[in-house]
Amino acid sequence: MNIHINQRPFTLPEPATVTDALAAFGAKPPFAVAVNGQFVARGEHGSKVLSAGDRLDVVSPVAGG
Image (cartoon, rainbow, N blue to C red):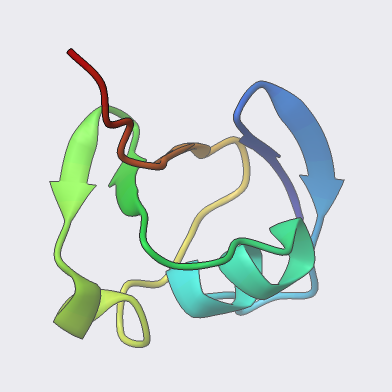
């Protein structure tokens, strides 16, 4: 199935979860994840099944002043 992570296309086998997508993306903590604009709690990453065409945003915190 084809999805987008941070606007980059990725192909994952079905069924795929947020955890699978993060592994394919190479995400390193800390980060927050939204699927189609909806925040997904860390505890739900392994159970949230993705669908073809989903868009994930992986955001790392930025410190500064």
